[in-house]
Length: 205
Image (cartoon, rainbow, N blue to C red; front, side):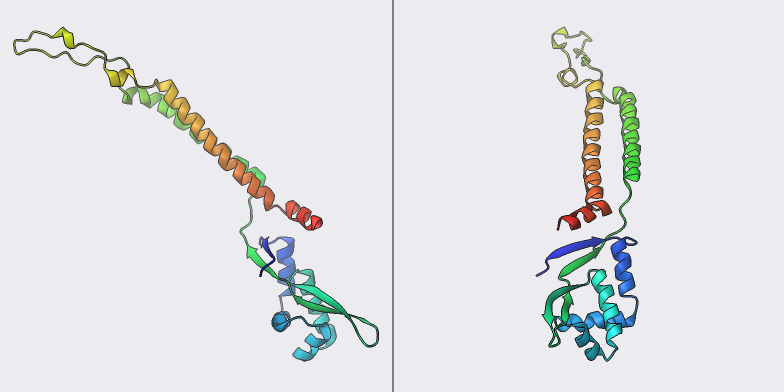
């Protein structure tokens, strides 16, 4: 079972260490050797038929990159400490680079400007599109041309329509609320994926 998920971005320190550790075919062969289980550096050297110094060099690089970890420590017959290495139980996810906070704020400042312009446009268009408030329906006439004044009454649907000011302000504040919610999410995501936050979490662990 996977213990943790690690998100890396192209160009960050962790990604560079992994790239350096896996830069040669020998390094790839070394990490494949651990597919069968934990091994010591001498066991890797014997399995691959390479000098122990070469095996130790690549193991140290893979250990520094976080791809290998020390599983246990043994003691040889001569009383020397022997480390047993194994593959780190993790999932690596390569994510696109996260934009800096300044670019996020600039993007939402531009969107806010669009909302302001749209609100001003609605302010100018709605009076022409909505019927006049309190308008009167045309008076019906008899065949002889006599008006029937008893049917004169304010138009209910027009009289009950909200004023243009309320419609525009409802649109403006609703759009601003959506932008604020999206901005808060992006700032939170930027903070969670920032190198400083990951370094702080690693220190806590």
